[in-house]
Length: 423
Image (cartoon, rainbow, N blue to C red; front, side, top):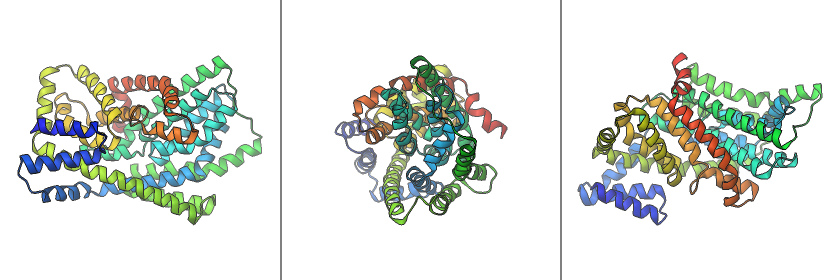
């Protein structure tokens, strides 16, 4: 049966079948032909896979991210970051990374971060003399931190599948996110000094206060959302709904950069994306139900622990495996399918599930920048008009930096676990 499942999965993958349909087809065929279970069970499991309150956070975070990406909040955040660090060497590049970090903390979405900040800062960097490939590569890579800096949609999914605390996952993402952001900043400063790329503009004293005051509403959002979660005022799902309401109030009534026509388009785009993601989740949860029913995770754990005795070797191999998975599978399917399969092996090697979750999220972050499913590559292609090949070439140096960050997160668990342990 396992051979049949693997062969059918690979065949459908090779002929470019959507991953959700692959998982649904493999599950249905195995149930019907091998196990003799009526296909009504498949329908029931599809429903059961969606029957979880925490999944409501996903469409809300998507909608909030789209509102901010197409409104004024992102532009005002960029203005603040340029005000803070724009005059130092490499200041424009630094402000680009910081803007991505801050926007990630209020959107929870990597593509939304690239669209919102990249569409503003890529042309600005090029205009101020920065190399085109550097500008594209920096913003495409920095935007990937949208899933590592909380709140994060992939973290919500991981917490659901692995039965860990969403709040702890969010806290665990802060330090790795700042680490990777720091690596990008250091690299940007070195290149800026080497090539003499200019800093940003200077600001008059009155102008500085005006910029800070203008952006204060957008800057307050992560405090409201994350502060509300960690203080216990509301759950992550409720926080997602609050983020939508807050973003709408700010864009409609304070910045006045939103009208019903624009909101209607944002709502339509968010519904389409949310529907696609939730369908993938339903199919993936059904696939996992079948794997668990047939003890596939136990078989995988026995194989791994038989052939690998060293915890650190296991982590290295898992990283290679996850990097490869990120090249051929979308992030939702990767989290929902791969995580439970490795659960028993992780427990046998005594690897903290929060730590492993961050390792997986960083690997997925790399997946955003690799062919053929690197979503950020296609987003960058859309906002720059450049070819996929040029975008891929531009992100290569930054991909190497992210791999360095991945190794540090993997082998120094304190980076991920310190903050959850003290709060």
